[in-house]
Length: 173
Image 1 (cartoon, helix red, strand yellow):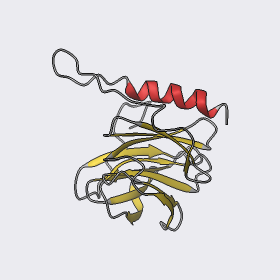
Image 2: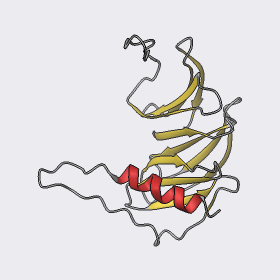
Image 3: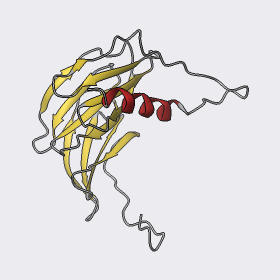
Image 4: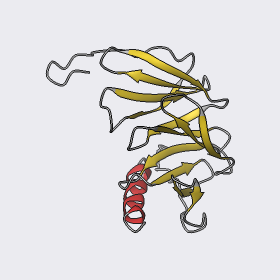
């Protein structure tokens, strides 16, 4: 999408099923990554509008983010796992199996670039040290309650709350 003209610049096509998550590269504004139900992560060139790389990740990918140095892609999956991929080669570098008891729905990089906040369908938030891929805070400390409004719609302030929590925790690490 072009800000000046208000027109679509590119439509990125290539996933074979629903796209669940996408993330921009802070290190390179012409790159982004997306993940979806087709069990792939795709790396995109936003200037030219085409897929640079497809990573077969073996499980539905609900969310992705690119590390602050641009060297890695972090992904959250249907099986509750968190995975770190090499941005250039597509090889999986590390993973935490079963970080969440069910689907890992969201990954958010902290301001320091060293911490990651995850949110799962198990109603829990987890904070992970990206360098060691270890949990930093007990899962019982951060509990995420999903609140249903009277109309049955999901209240979607959880992402904002999660970013605020990650910022305060990340500044202490």
